[in-house]
Image (cartoon, rainbow, N blue to C red; front, side, top):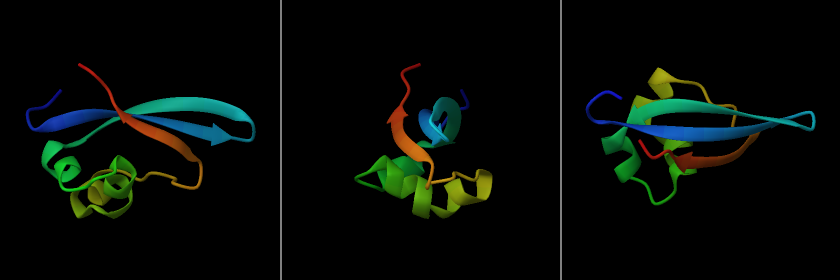
Length: 65
């Protein structure tokens, strides 16, 4: 994991199937929000680095290293 980054595990639902993805986002971005989902939807640094289909997103949680 890069310095200043945190791993986030995303769980998606797709036509009754579930799958997960692990992504890295800036730690500084996540600390600016009460809810991780808001960070994924709104933070400019996160939005520039990845696209998250929030309509299929079931959960987002910090992944322990």
